Amino acid sequence: MMQAGIDTRLLDLYEEMIGSTDLTEVLLRIARVVGEDFDAERTTIYLLREDTQELESVAVVGNVARSIRVPVSPQSLAGYCASCGRAFVVPDAYGDLSGIHPDLRFDQTWDRRNGFRTRDILCVPAVFREQTLGVIQVINRRGGCFDAAALAGLIPVSRLVAYALYHARLYDELLTLKALRKQKASFMRVMVHELKSPVAGSKMLATGLLYARPGDEAVAHAAARIANRMDELLALVEDILNLSRVQQGGVLSDVLVLDLREETARASEPYVTQAAAKGLTLQRHFPSDPVWARFDRQGYQLVVSNLVSNAVKYTATGSVTVRLLPEDDHRAVLEVRDTGIGIPRADLPSIFQEFFRASNVRGGDIKGTGVGLAGVREIVERFGGAIEMDSEEGRGSRFCVRIPRVSGGSDCPISPAVP
Image 1: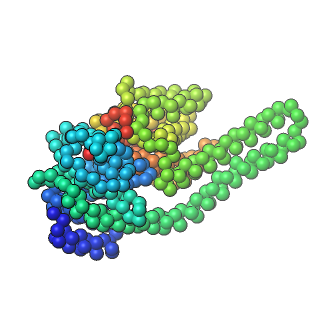
Image 2 (image 1 turned 90 degrees about the horizontal axis):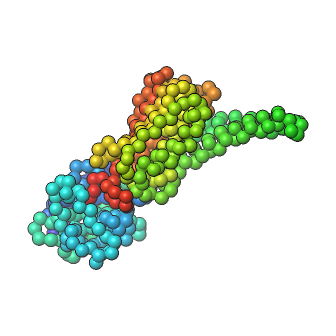
Image 3 (image 1 turned 135 degrees about the horizontal axis):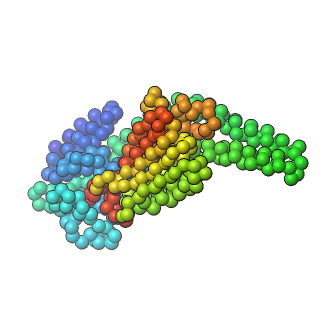
């Protein structure tokens, strides 16, 4: 175990990795080498995602077909390894784990669902320049159990993995910087155009107040118009700030296990009054039981409020429907449907692009920046979800957000439950 054979193959992979941009394939090959030489049933290499405070599998060899995501916390073995930054061996995952950490537990949900029995486990953090970038987890040695010697043999592998993850992060950041150069000109052009109108209008109206008589109705009217124009400015700034925070990888608030019923009801409540003021019906349908998901609370509220506010904004007559339901054991669905102006067919491929506005609203009286939906998609996909949309001009739109569920109201792994 971890003799000259694996050392030689890892050295070959290291040399290959230096000039490779497909580091996912390199990590997968590292996982295969580890699984073979440690005679393991499963090997997983996790990447630490700071934006969601989770570990996400980037290479899995063994009996897991789908991506694995677990929170960085003492309530999962890999999560604890990332949070404490130390390596450890678990003789029996179903046994007493308090010797490693008092709060440490093993979630057996995945085992029960797949008829599997997790036994002995190796967990080693992938650390580069004193920063934990991921975790290597090796499960079930086929002959006997893993011991301290096996753990010591896995540590050199973790150093190679850490460098690979660091290399991958630098490569992604380089691509992002190149894209930002192209976006900067568009960003500034839209900013200048959108800020100029409300600010210039407010200045003109404020000047007019100087010549109005105190108590005159014209004063009250002009003041109301100033307030409305400045609200447009504040909404624009808030949209751009939220989008920039999301794109920079930051969370908007704490990442928690949330009951999506409560969060959806809370975020959509302000628009009941707005819809009624326009003569619209806003219908909301929620399940009777909790729907748990691990999400950035403010981020989820931003998703709901953006979709519902757009539906109300772009609907002149008819109704808006907000529906939350569990789609299956793994996902929840948030659906927002309206009977509004819809989106022209030619505009549908661009609707989630930054600063894009559909052709049937440009130049009209409906204000907007095209920033919101770009941020919505960014947030949803960050937490393992997906958003889709169908729309027909003149008949309305439907946005459908699918979000991974967790099994209960605690800080537990995103389904499927994994060690």
